[in-house]
Image (cartoon, rainbow, N blue to C red):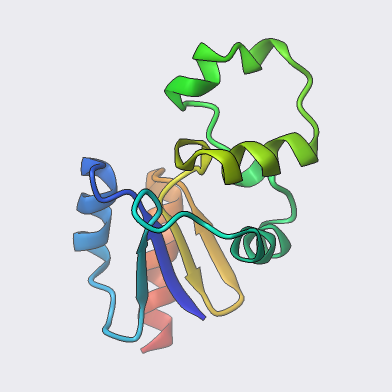
Length: 119
């Protein structure tokens, strides 16, 4: 599976997408236009090891809903991500059995290396 989950209105996602130069064999999914399904999220969780690893604690709604003060469990992270796209840490690149989540330079550099090794 080769897939890139992103938010089209996010400048950072757009910059990373352009930088990665993904091939035509990648499926691009704008998570606002096409929300993530439970099955897709379950697959990402399998690759990442937890829903929390996929959850964005930087989301505006995270602060607005006071989630920082709550002791969230795995099921909570899952439900919030499925409920609203903003809770998915993005972008997410799936390259077969490898997963790259977020926009840190370390993650992006690792994704670039994996993409180059694939060619």
